Each structure stands twice: as structure tokens, then as C-alpha cells.
Length: 226
Image (tube, rainbow, N blue to C red; front, side, top):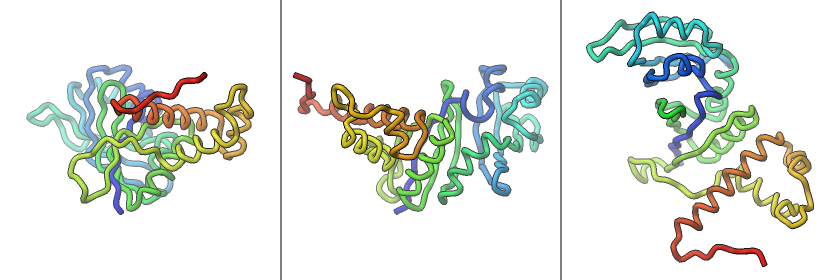
């Protein structure tokens, strides 16, 4: 069933990182994102709280921006509308979404975080896309998820993604949580054929989700070691 998900990434690890550093009051709203070929990602972006000269000076020196072109001048709301072309480093993250059948519905920035709203034909494709992004060393959090037709609003989910389920199940089976540990993080990463960093992030998020389930359940009992 079609799945809509809301993901967050740090601005420091994604598009326009240096532009935001130079222009901390900048507001961004992505109108649409299209892929041109395997590595070219072209978003149409509204910028506000900035003048044209300051914006273009920042875009010119931003290593995540390959090209930019203004499509509309100042609107009545003081917004600027641009067509950007991202460099391959940023485009490769977006292509992880496209490669698994995903579509970027919209994207916004707030409090140092990109929030991407994505649509996938199947939930499994979302999990595969998240895994691909993590393999590139980019930290990504699945904040909300809902299957289309269930609710117009995204509902917070405590469900683990499939990669998180696999990682935490294998970690348990291999004795990673034993005292002393039966397997190191590096050895476990080799077993799962993923990077050390990707596994560390995956386990961290899985543990946070499971801890959240306990904390949100007033009747749940927290297990304690002897």
C-alpha cells in the first residue's frame, strides 16, 4: 500500500548547508523536485527573509549548488523563486529516493533540519531508500509514517523500519547486548555487510524507538539488570 513518510536530515549534512550558515534567518520552501538523469537533482525553491544579492552571493559559494537561476523576482510577500541544480553529493541522496520508486512531495527547513515529505508505492521501498541513504554516511530519521487512505495527517509511529529490525535482531542473536559482549560493533557490521557508522546509527535509532515505547506506556515495566 502507498506509504507517505516524513524524514528529517541535518542541514549540515544535506543541501544548502553553507547558505544557511551565511544566512541564518533564511526561510526555504521547496515547490517540487525533479531528477534529470541519474545524478542531477533540480528543485524549484522559494526563498524568503533575504535579498537577491545576499542570496546569490551565498549560492555562488555553496559547494552543494552546481547551478542556480532565478525564475521570479520579488513577490508581494517578498519571496524569491529559483531553479537550483544540486551537486552529485546531494543528488545521490535524492536519487536513493527515486531509485526505490519514491517521490518528494515537499521539503522545508526549520531549526537546522530539513524535513522531507516522501511518497512510496510500498513501505518496503521506503525502508530500502533509508538504508541506501544511511550507507552514504548521512544521518536520517523517519519521524512519521502513514499508509495512504488511513489518515490525511501523518501519525507518529513507534514501528521500527525493516533495516532497524534486522540490525537489532541480529545484534541480539550475536550477543552484542550481552555482558561481556560476544561480538563487536565492527564485527557485527561486517556480518550485516554495512558500514560501522551506518550500523551504529541504525541501532541508536532502534533503541530510541523501543525506549520511547516503554516511556509512553504508563503500564509498561522497564526491565532492570540483576
